[in-house]
Image (cartoon, rainbow over all chains, first blue to last red; front, side):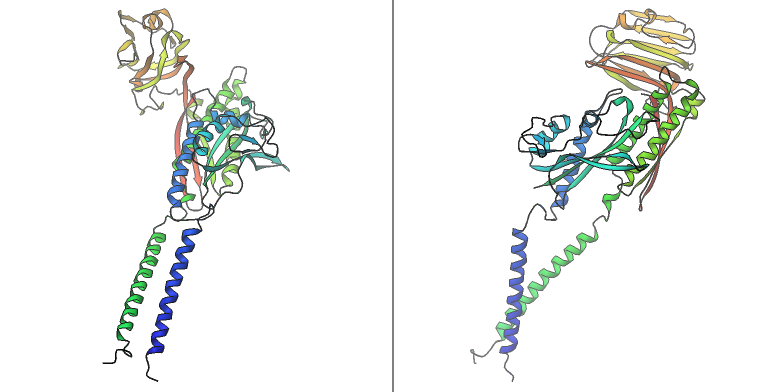
Length: 193
Length: 275
């Protein structure tokens, strides 16, 4: 009745359970870092990616007076096709054997920055279309790379197109009454694999 | 003593272990609490400096394009203000649809009163009377390639406005000083004076020795005391192997209003046109 063994066994059980729980938490934390896992270190990674992405757009979107920026030039000449990186070049989605690879200012800088650092990326373009007498945003994909991770970083740049820019047929003229052609929002989504 | 039945030491060890584990868990939880508590909640929804710069840049581009489209040769002069406002109105309404995707609202307004009343821009860096008076207009210019170097509708104060062409050693190889009574040209061969006839000055004409007296090699063109002059200027030529354009007529103020559920910002910026 007054034996302390039961109390001792209970405490020992609690201690054992705590040790087991801590070991399990440690083991799970140590082994389950997948591309989709959020972690405290991702804050720094996200900040770095944000800066890198903005720098890419800053470089591409600079132009002297009366000149077209490299980024705008690429958007003007985009033919609506979606591309994917195959390990060496950006090939057409669903038609990898085609020789119509994407090779422009954007892919040149992506190849020398994000690809070299193993950073997964996709590029989307949102522009306005007239639908049922309303002007609404429409999003198309220029470079596809699957679903991004939870820690993906998005940087965007808005660019205004004019009638005089001779835009390829993919993007419509939303305002034929004036020289304004369309407004596009190009988004670069980046994440660490 | 019965060492076989005494469990006091075992209890003490266990208690120590449990207290230690409890302290570790408490510290980790407290650390998490402090970390989360100091996180900037929804900081990502605020307008970043890059987004502000992008918004200003596209507004500037659109104002300049709208001005150019409405004043290009062949356009109806009497409709230039209406055409400009129509294009800007379309820009503002469509831009708000793009920003709406992010839960943000944007409104662009503009003031063309200076343009309507022919109040030309100052020759300061930003075109305003209080702008930086001494500034570099263009660098790396091949002086012999300058095809247009013209001032029109200009007014100079009595204290004068100066243009300098400096070589790569920052030595002034040519300068022109203009004030309300005339001009003074200084170059490597000497100094000459003259009167400004009318309100138009073509620095490419022989009177000003601009092309004739600048030795080969790139020069930078500087405006000095730009607050002492206003009017239109136009410079065109080759700099660093590329054609450059510098032209300014008026200043158009634009106010950008940006709203989210948590933030409201208004900023007014002077934009020079056409470039």
